[in-house]
Image 1: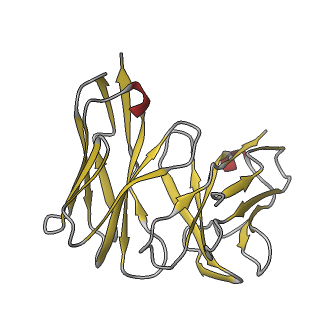
Image 2: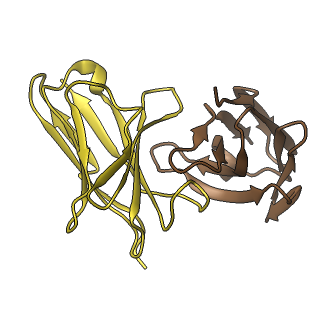
Image 3: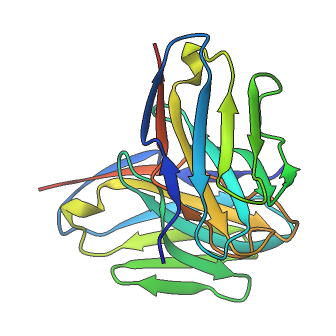
Length: 115
Length: 112
């Protein structure tokens, strides 16, 4: 059973470009969480999604950031018009059920560098 | 407001020594508490998960304790190894659906 997969592992974008980060949850998991980790800081929650639904986006910046988890395919975290402050590691986690009852399994992360 | 506080922020110990990391939380109503290990440049990996009724759980040289009355947990590492150098993150979940609350982590450095 493959773990949570994220791609790309490293992404470099110039200011103003768009960044698309992908997350494929573990097989059988329908709950996906996105986290951001700034350099030298802890993980910060961004958004929690189920298939075709955003359940909680309270940690997502109001502008330029969006997330989706379509019926088919990976979850996508999209950052429009990136700025230097968006440089961070973005981690995706998945779980089989809701509510944090079950363990969240983390992917290896995507390291975004904005130049 | 749900909060998870970890201490110390960082810790340096010699190889072979034991250490204990602390986690205090205010998440309510409580569902479970997890400890994760995050190696530099990698995603977090689960060490232990404890529910309300459990007060201790071991995973090899890692032993986690939970006092649900005082809302405190500790992670004890025995006979530390160089590979234990990592960030240790305490995560607390409530019974409401959705996000868990993450601590900022304790950075452990084990020196030879």
